[in-house]
Image (cartoon, rainbow, N blue to C red; front, side, top):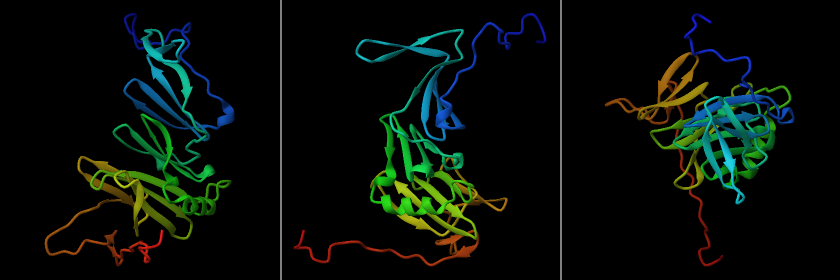
Length: 240
């Protein structure tokens, strides 16, 4: 304490800590959103009001009430037995939507105002079960990197195993599906304003970038890979 008028001091008589269920694993990530603190444990996702508490009515509704002496309010778990495992780097956010993975449960998750949704269920259950199963959860060999591509409005997730073995693909809310796979494996991924960037070996690379007279499509980290499109349709249109 530097002076008698210094207000940035917690009184020893105030309870400024909160306890989480240790059975749900360690805290891997904290994300502050408006007056909420979202807490990502290995096996659970919780939310807590910041500088507020909630009074619940008989109908179950909660009304935030300001508490000047309250730092973190009541901790409430989100419905669903999902966490972020030990992959905080898979987290990405856009607006009120948060995306992350739970490798222990072979799931890719979206957390929004309507709660938790398992977006890996959109036609990709077997794929993610196989991919996450090949990542060694016990020794944490391999990493999962996620990011929001503001240019294409897609969540990009890269599952990277040792020996440069990786799978990178994107989820699109417009089609509720996984339309694209990519030939790059970033160390980090993020968006700034209208541009999407990744980091590879200490260098920052801008994606979706075109320069006059220079071919940049299908080229990541100065390595070109041919592109292809696979059409999926029913060859027997008269059959159901």
